[in-house]
Image 1: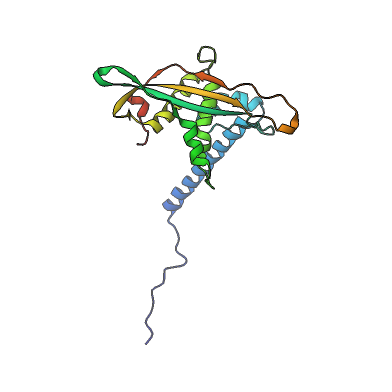
Image 2: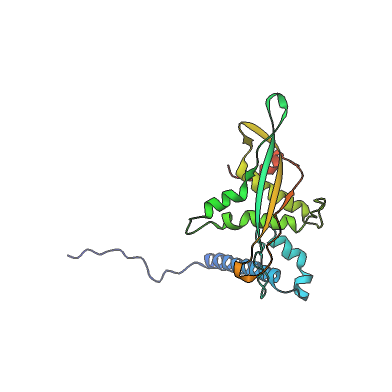
Length: 220
């Protein structure tokens, strides 16, 4: 006698409430994805009436995590190598300030990229884009903010560095942080006959205080 084998019903139908929930979730997901892609498109597209009208909303969504370093129809290749270093000031023995040596943040990224067949996007672009964001919102003469997003750019750059350095260095609590940025123009090929590039430019930022709030949400 052949034993009957239970088989799942092939024509099982979702209930009306389940279909409604799934439909609404799919619609919300599609709408959110469409709005995000539209905002990114307006961000990289040439200036137009729509992008100018909704610039504040687009910037609020795109900056700083999703900023694009190119313009639609007009890519902007890099012409300089940027090296970002940081050093911290801690409270040493007896509370006396202790300034530590410079830490090559960009050098660490390069070490992680070199020889890696699939380098991380974070190692390639996070720190570089954070510096571009800061540089575009601050005057190199006095490091004063030149736009409404200056404070955000400072916090973004600081938190990236603190994520990598941590709360303590050599067992001492980090109290302040300073950045040094060296810009080196990419040399032209020897056969071009162009003049040699200028000497690298070094730019030091002022000391920034470090508080517990600066570590909020950071891993480690």
